[in-house]
Length: 123
Image (cartoon, rainbow, N blue to C red; front, side, top):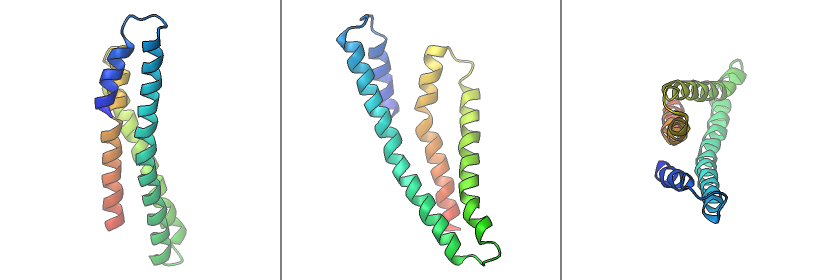
């Protein structure tokens, strides 16, 4: 994703006021960003559904509800924490660079959360 963001951001900063290059750049950037969020979302959604059903099948009836919601709660908490850390890390950068670095760090945050999910599912 970062490979696509850097050239698109550079092309978006070219001094073409309202020209076709700026519009094409915005369309291209939106297409890349939608694909970059959609494809990992399918995988993480699949893992969350399968892991929740697996937990419900193997857990005793007394703790079934707690264990089924634990994965959703912990993954939401981890994503929120990772987002806060990234926002804090890039807050001191200039605005025109900070949001690009923050957006470029999304795949690494998603990979870390995915690694945690895979570790949780294997346990």
